[in-house]
Image 1 (cartoon, helix red, strand yellow):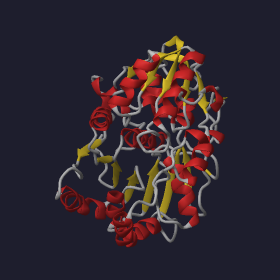
Image 2: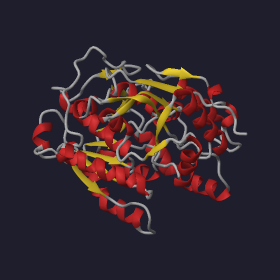
Image 3: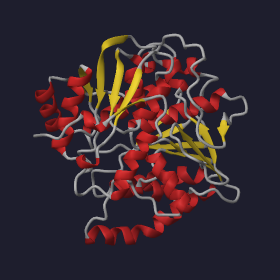
Image 4: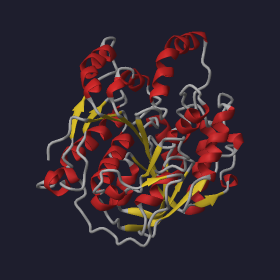
Length: 397
């Protein structure tokens, strides 16, 4: 199967790459190459569908992965724009190997970490962007991706795949005609505001490209509960590729906790977070803590010493780790992407996903009002999960 040069994808995180694979699988599984498009909220997981047969843990090690993927995947040229942190890069390399095993072409392009790296990457990729008929975007908030969209006048179709719960904020900002800005970002200092002002024309043009209009088709491929803009097409991501390639998992008797980077982004107070994890560990008999790839080593050491939890640093996105197993019969998370995605990925396995609310008292003084409402919305819109009260996690004392 030869990857099509007409479909070009840009990803900057392991989850984005996973969702490009899900999108390609959904496109390839549809005879009309359009798949199930929805007019509103994505459908619930199909719990009546037969469970896929077990597959090898890592599809990239199969004897003939492209042959297995033939007829069920839409081949894509995927450009990986890796961040600088080692955990993300490691997960991206694993996901890149899996993508190649599925018959996709993967190009690793450094665009950070050096003075000339961004300009060199833009020069290297500009021609491909101009020639592409369809461009798939993993992070519409990325400044680098927005710069790449500027010359994309010839692309007849733009597709945005999930970057987790950020998709909810992207859709809301696009609908309101606002500049694209990550939900946890504060205003910053004078130099930051000057940079924002100088970059505004590029950001505005990228936003207009992502807004449906004229002959350009805009699609959003998501597991999140969002409503499409007029003229936009919404495709449901129910993790069909993940369920077909991995598992079903072996279940353990214990409870697993899922970590979050809300401390690292300055939203949640570290002491309050430690107290919350300790309380959840005691209440639910948790034994393992799946760390977010951005959590700091020092924070994780402190958590382990205070709770006795086994800290697990996943080498793949959690949806794949959980589906591959072993995994606890209960998975407890704070408000995050996984409270929306794991019910799809683990459909029919008997695993319960629970979400612990974030008490407003846990938030730092730097947390914006938008951060408060956004976190509440992530929890309120989660389906097929069990709600846990924030009171389960008392303040540190």
